[in-house]
Length: 189
Image 1 (tube, helix red, strand yellow):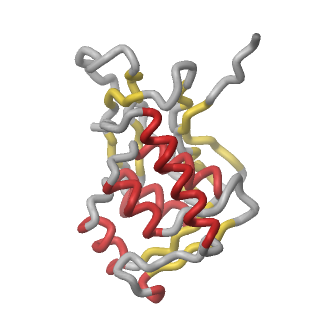
Image 2 (cartoon, rainbow, N blue to C red):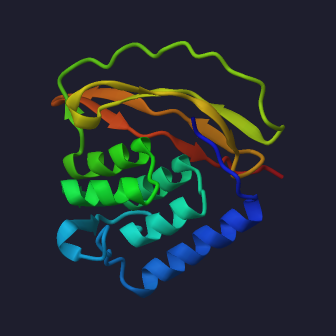
């Protein structure tokens, strides 16, 4: 289940601080357990500096929503090459299975030859408040098999934000996962 407990102003300060902090050390990552040998990261001409694993740990501890973290990873074109030790360290640090799976997928640019299963129909409980949006569940591929990640209510990052769901696109090499993200339409005056 996806959830967030941060207010929008606090979230803005946190994300801005992380971007400035990441830029100040050149986007060079720290390993999951403080050792650069356990994982590596690179950024490919992305939207901003690639968040280091330490940056992501701070975001997870601050309870930033997975979708916002994944969007920053996606926008920055970060690539994480995680070994088993690094993955265990991320689990110990409180990273969700969904977030870890998305980080793993950055290293492999996940393309599969198997058609994704049909989306499951989910029951929605009442929204916890008016500023929450239902984020539908999605199929993930941790460990090579299909796994359903349940949907849930999440606090929207802005009043006009629209969730663009995760989707699987078919290309010449097979099916590729395009992670879900928030879209912020420009306001028209």
